[in-house]
Structures are given as C-alpha cells and as structure tokens.
Image (cartoon, rainbow, N blue to C red; front, side):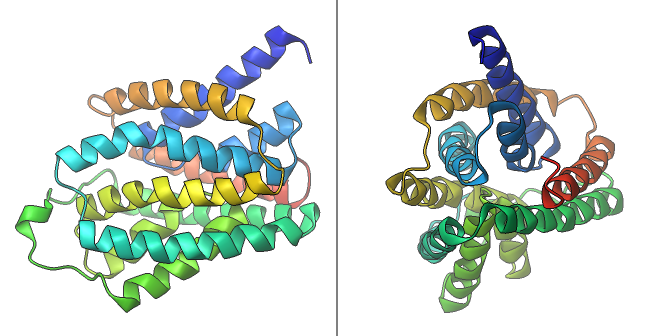
Length: 259
C-alpha cells in the first residue's frame, strides 16, 4: 500500500471513530474494527487486538476528567475490573480458536443488537440526561459478588466481540442502581485495565500490530477531544440514533462477510 494512502486510511479510521465516540456517546469500536479489516487488510483477530489497545490508550483523557468530577466509584471499579478482566481473558482465548468467519458472524450479530438498542434508547430519551450525581452524594453502591459475576459474563462477551465493553458495563451498573454519571465514569475507568488485558492476551499470541496501535491511537485521542468539545453546542441524539442504524448495517455486512 502506498504510504500516502496508508496515512489517509489511518487518519480516517482514527478521526471518524474517535470523534463519533465522544460526540454521540457510542463506542467507536463498532466502526473501527470493520474499517481496519476493510481498509488496512487486518484479520478480525488482529483488528480486535489493535482496537482493544487503542481503547486502553484513548480512554485515559476522558477517565481523568471523570475522576476529577467524582464520577468513579472505587469499590465498584475494583470488583468490576477484576470480574471483567477475568472474563475478557476467557473471551479472547475463545476468540483465538474460533474460525474467522464464525467470529465475524458473532461480531456482526452483536453489532446488529447493539445498533437496535442504540437507536431505540436514543429516540426514547431524545437527548435527556439525568441529574448529575457524584460519588460524594451516594452512601454505598453494589460492589460484591453480584457485580463481579455480571462483569465476568460481560467480559467474556467483550473478548468474543473485541469491544471496549462499555456497551455492556454501563447497563449492568445502571441496573444495579448506579446513577448514570457514576455508571459511565466507572465503566470508562474499568475499560482501561480490562481492554489492556484483552489486548495483552491477543498480543502474546501474535495478533498485535503496534504501528497501528500508536498511529490510530494518537489520531483517535485527538479526535475524541474534539468530539467532546462539540457536545457542548450540538444536540446529538438524532445522529446517535442514525449511528445506531449504521452500526446495525455494518454488523449485517460483517456477518455476511461482505467486509
């Protein structure tokens, strides 16, 4: 591939997924993985490895902001990270032995389900955000065995699909009574160690490409910052709903091996 074309694809993958992830509040991995396969020629397992490493790096600035705003519940974070970390090891281990075509089908079906969920929830909420609650305003939230088991199962799903995991973690935390801002902050923070574990496991088995991790990760981090600034003056719920449809469509294409 020509260097100029390669640079263009790297910027496109990093910029589009990073910007949309923070602007619309939807994980960019649903587009990043298919784009890396389509434009860079990576196998789905290599795309999983790069994606998880990029998430671990690009999530750091946002997590720092969440921590400063007191949106991270430390007790729950420890339990969730341990449970999901163990699950993602198992999930990525299974993924390495699953044929690529089957893995694409799993990824595609997951994207279709998440796309439907994203579109439905966006239309239902229409951009409404619940009142901000910090960890200083809550006495005690779930941080025991129930959380650990649910996160373990979510970690397995994360490893099988190569996601960052937030699409699973936030609903679990919310269902267990976490206020939305704390659920998002805690979920984002746990993604750093959990995605790192998943990426490390895939790396140990030869699926990592550090050039793409560093280049796509850098572009993603910058574009994520721009996306976060854009949320201050643009209503994104309609585009988030449309993006949900796009996720479903991409998942359909991957499942049918069109990508």
